[in-house]
Image (cartoon, rainbow, N blue to C red):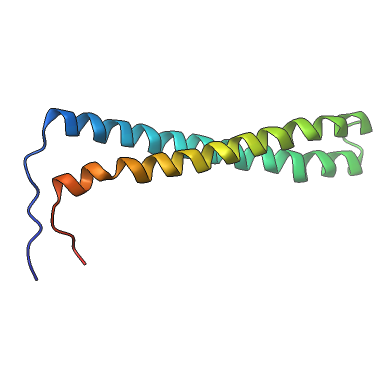
Length: 99
């Protein structure tokens, strides 16, 4: 098995790595927001309305949460694409692949 020897990292590559990490954190934020809005719209509001803890007028807010779910879902897909595009810098630093 050959050793993977990284090349010297330049300042522009550090900037690319930094932007890739920003996309990773944005992915985590958007995924959490997607899951939270879906949880509120699809389970929390209907459950509270059925049990009578909130009035039935609260169920009119569900489409807003579903809209936010779609918006954050699209943002998750966008950040995944950006992360995949940003991984080119890793191929420049590690010219040899492991497998």
